[in-house]
Image (tube, rainbow, N blue to C red; front, side, top):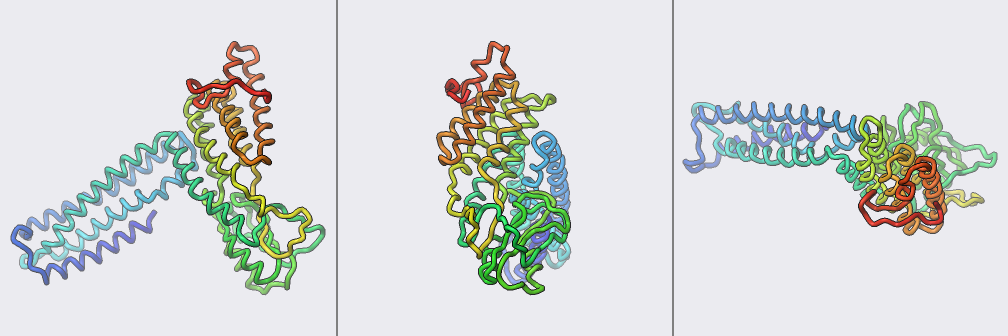
Amino acid sequence: MWVLPLAGGLLGLLLGSAAILADRSVHLPSYWTYSPSTASTVLSAIVGAMAALTGFVVTVTVLAVQMATGTFSARYMRLWYRDRVLKLLLALLVGTLAFSFALLRQVESRFVPNLGVTVAGFLVVASLLLFVVFLDRFLHRLRPVAVAALVARYARRDFAAYAAALTAPDVFIGMFQPAGEEPTLVVRSARPGAIQALHAGGLAGWAREHECLVVLCHRVGDFVPAGAKLIETYGGATPGTRAEAKLRNMIVLGDERTIEQDPAFAIRIMVDIADKALSPAINDPTTAVQALNHLSDVLRLIGTADLSRSQWPAQGAIRTGLVIPARSWEDYLTLGVTEIREYGSTAIQVMRRMRALLEELRDEVLPEHQAAVDEELARLAATVRRTFAHSVDLDRANTADSQGIGGRTRLAGPAA
């Protein structure tokens, strides 16, 4: 968060110096001139106001994010402090403060930076307008459905690049079985952390250059302890001493997972929102239904993506390239529905919305993924029978409804 505000402060100082030079060489009309006392008062007020507003923005952001992370998901905070509008607002506030302070130092009885004072006034107006935009954006994001929609939008934005990386030349998805073959090089983690991203193109290019097979030992999103295996290479000549450091630098480790190359993390956040809503302390099944709406969109996106041409062949005949252990469709589907099904088993609208979600997925996903959806439908039917076995609402809980309760309904099919 500090990079853009720091850049804004430095830019404000530079613009302040440029405005002073312009004022010394440009003659302005009389209605754009200020007395020394007026200029000093205006600039002093702007400096104080920008400092106070910057503190207010930071304080409100911290308090509101703390409330949101306790209500929705602790993983939400990472999405918020990376928000571009927040960073731009802080940069503009700090830049306006630095700009005004640079002018204030040059106000004298014989010289007043008239052009700079006018520009400072326009910057204050721009700061206030952006603050209103920020406040509107911030308040809207305090709604659970808005957070789920934001996460789903990030997942859709990044999934195309993620799928393209997995289907690039010399990149394969699957588990490599060495069959007794010893690796020519083992790269270990220098520190503990979650795998946030990897440079698939760089790793595949390194494999081509050295005519070997580069095998990742963990999926993106996995936590690896210090000293754990990150990469193994098979075949080719024995790499030099710099190869280990070069390969290690192509994998990014951090304290927490990210969405960019880990669609499962986006699903995890939306499931967390639904789980919190279904907790006894909150008991808000409608929020869980809204989270299921956006989960269905992300699961459909993953289930309709054809990554079969990148699957690692069972015989393992390929000896050059990059092998990535990616998640299967069953992994994504299990993550998306299992906890919500269990925690929401007593909420009729959650059961109805989940059935509608699964039936829609069964009609939309690739044929090879339909068996997993049928299995989840059978598990859902068993959960409903267990929970509503002695309830008069058994038939209603076993009905698909795209709105939970109140939408178009359809009785359960053979899977029930």
